[in-house]
Length: 399
Image (cartoon, rainbow, N blue to C red; front, top):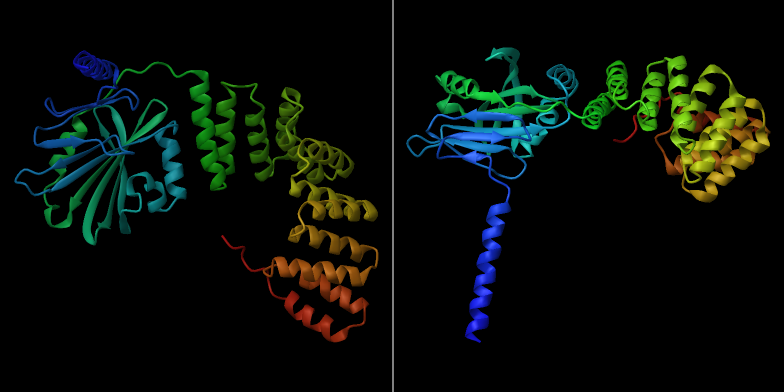
């Protein structure tokens, strides 16, 4: 029993030893006042009065407490896959301050007010400086946030200064910035490069900065030219930017690389519809539906295309297929109502359009169509009511 007990202790000690040998080394060295992160590609030498720790979702948090009272806090944040400071500036301009600093703020701060922004040079590196105000736990703070590009990533340093201790803090900030040194980095792989530029392209898409998205996806494709998804993203951005010919080329390139992308065929159809080539658009949408039979939006586009060509029965059949898959689709009932109107089935049209409004009362178009249907049905009061409602613009969609 004693031998077994000592064997257990020995095994535990051995496991702890090897765990220590192989555990990931901490990037924080408080004894030598250093922070070093190979992932972020940065080394920071701190004045001795700073103490560092590493809370979750940060590179580090440093606190300056010379007399036991915290007079400054510094938080390091790593933002991967934003390839340059120029990209960050464009994203920054398109986002309100709480969104662009979300990784730092994390719902812990409030009452934001931007004061100033500029670029500064330190040791040959360009930093983006942002000075702003906020509150933490009801206490007013002044923040100096600095962003620098390191490889394909960004590092941010957020200095948090209680308003009563704000005087003469620039030297303290300068001492930290002067202690920052980028580490030597390997040339990024093609996959890393493409991932970074695709990521920033996706950010531009969200803010509908289509020209910037196009440039980013083209940059990603320069390293991964055989990625069909990148070609699709590029095509969609071209189309949103009103450039149909390069959009067509991008979707066709995606389809040459894979015949299994419903999204590529849908994009191709959108280009054809935009160009007035409805037959080609219908063929592309039908191919997309084969690949993605549950995609409700494809049925809507196909039904509308049939209706535009005067192929009303095929349009009706398409919207019926849609509603068999999703009975509560407002778009499905609206499309079916339009198709019934086109063949003078006014009572059926009224039923579908009223159902549309039950599902989405914010829509304006069904009121206009109902006014037409009731007029044909000689239901004067109903027609007049819907005409008055039709004059109101569509309410904004709920976010």
